[in-house]
Image 1 (cartoon, one colour):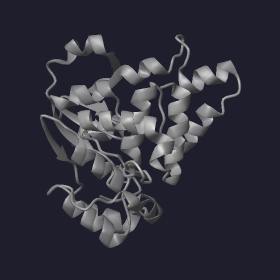
Image 2 (cartoon, rainbow, N blue to C red):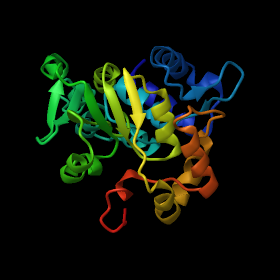
Image 3 (cartoon, helix red, strand yellow):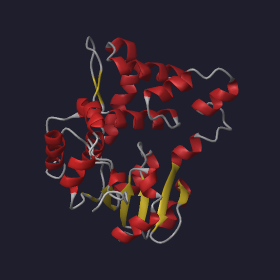
Image 4 (cartoon, rainbow, N blue to C red):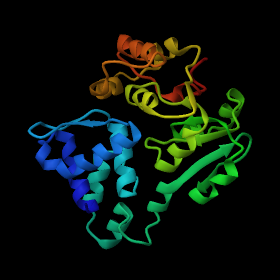
Length: 260
């Protein structure tokens, strides 16, 4: 399927389209979900398609079209590109595109060092790394002082909103501590992520931070993604999010204005 066709069908998922209108996309999504156990869309013949997890859906779309796509607005920008130059930048359709290669890289920082971008053929240089902290947000990943002071892994890996296949492959054989947003979408992502072993970082003062700095608007926006059941690790956190009707972004934890 052409990228443009796939993006057009992906855009329709914003409005729960009939299955027949996105049949091609659904075939690709089902294959991807079977391989990754990352379930983000549901629907069959004669039904309307329902998007279950936006973050996981955009991870699938980014990997499939080999470009960063993190929202329906980003899809619209790509489809609306008017010139060839804009189209190359937006969709990576050109062999000379600088966007697609970054979908096949790993951004990693060894403790006490600066971040380095690794390609697939360079991952052998990281065989000695077994314990990592996976960081969701760029602001947190670049806050070297805070991370180095509070964590003692061998390295930090940047997840972003949609970790690509190379990042997932690297983490699948590591012991990973996830430093992610404490929101519905991120906790769904955590439960679905496969690693050698994994744990979730929760601040000691989580309840107070959630009550004082929690984001109510984001909770309401993500409420559609709530699942019927969660793992023993994420279940208690989800219960707290529901009790306060708020979610907490990880930047709050290391914000100097928030007392710990």
